[in-house]
Image (cartoon, rainbow over all chains, first blue to last red; front, side):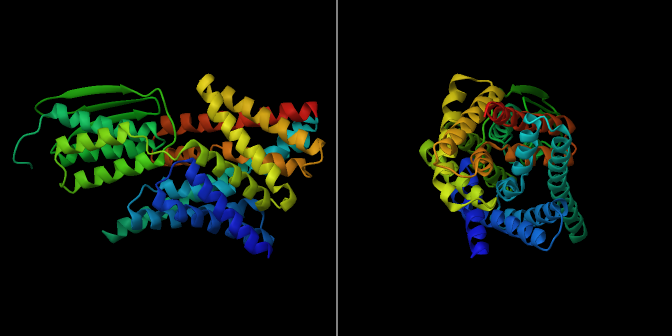
Length: 143
Length: 252
């Protein structure tokens, strides 16, 4: 039940984000699907007691692979799909917690949380870069 | 390449218009350069140079008639539909199916038409997205409606205030302030339960996801200037949201 609820909400949230970013109408479903896959990978990895940073890395990697496939298939700029897929991974909750501890003058905890949020953003970036590099390698060997 | 010679003036104009539309609507910098060079090459100009930053485009073509032109980009928004449409046009130009006059006309059409979803639809989308994020962050369903209302109101307010206050950072700060206040009030009057989850959920529609992705892709493609400045923009937005929420929390 919880899994279905999570899958459904991540699908709707990503598609809604696509709408906010004005993606073409025909790609809304794909945006939702990318977001859903990204969130389910993140969730499953953390359930398997993987830390948040590697879980984000894997999810971001898969998002970019899927986005590249969609981009090639539908001849649409890749950013349309990857944006929607990345959104659920953004460490909003951690950043919020960090901010809250700053306000409460607990700077030690705040810095810890902020560094973790920063590392997760870095993991998203590395996930994006990594699959991009692999894609370029594949394209080069194809030729 | 083509039977009848096309004036380089016309080609430059077409390239610049395509680049301008992509850059103004949230496309990546490398896509702008790539598209302009591709269009120029398709019309027989092999040697063209472009330099693109988030705030301007310099485009130059070599050859018999040299032209260099500069376009300043002051207004930027997010409309991936337009980016996608220009991408389609540039694809057709590359395959040689589109004469330059027709391409320019079609680009102008893309530029002037808005191709946006109506504002009310976006506000509803923001509201629903906020609610869904609440559930994703393991909040309770009883907070779904309050969060949706807060998130929707916040997004509506951001659109409104952005027209009055052109400084983005400030508009986002005030919006975060509003979202925080509404959430605190809702919890205070017993309409919401978990304040933390509620604020996180309703702030999500403001998160600079597109800027983060575009910044990383630009950095990767070697556009250091654009990548860093887009990253700075994303950081500023995140900072504005964070400080707005922090201001509310410090009073609460």
